[in-house]
Image 1 (spheres, rainbow over the protein chains, first blue to last red):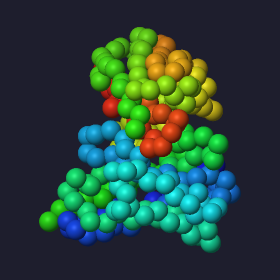
Image 2 (cartoon, each protein chain N blue to C red; image 1 turned 30 degrees about the horizontal axis):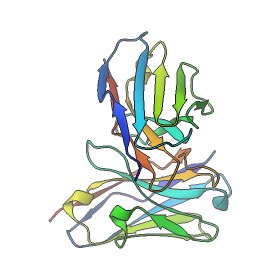
Image 3 (tube, one colour; image 1 turned 180 degrees about the vertical axis):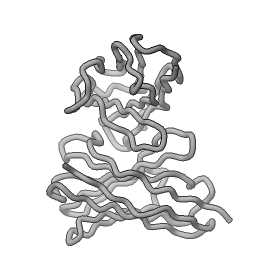
Image 4 (cartoon, chains in turn orange, brown; image 1 turned 90 degrees about the horizontal axis):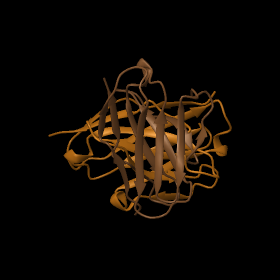
Length: 119
Length: 106
């Protein structure tokens, strides 16, 4: 049973950065890629990026390039998503999700982390 | 980027009804299409992958079809627990993109 545990809610000021963690258990950490998907209040789902936990390679959506960084720590089975230069429009729930390397469907999801950007 | 267009944006239905949701891709994606169910305050849940394959543990009243650019999610004999928002997602190429969602409500 794969379980993803995310860090707690954050409140940040515009211009600040936030780092959200996603710890995986119940499977081989390097067997699945980890994606980040966000959802603004009352809105749909938006893909942000992916990391291959084995080699650490990443790919990001153009909308976030230059502002997002996804890293991993294989010793703790944890993936991190850092978003910088926050603005009010970044207020959203941030989900981590895992997919096998041979397709990009999100079989397992974390519970989400609410990030609120407010002055 | 591949745009995914879902319709309708919302549908009113009753328990026992059949509901059909459509998803159209802006370019061909073969069968690289998934469907998710999301309930308020919860993470989405994968229902269908590869356009028509039922994810483990998902009831057989859910089914998917289509290929290329046009896809359908059908829910037969709607159950009370099926009232939720449904999203399609293309897995053909980065950036991965989702449809705008369809809310199934009473």
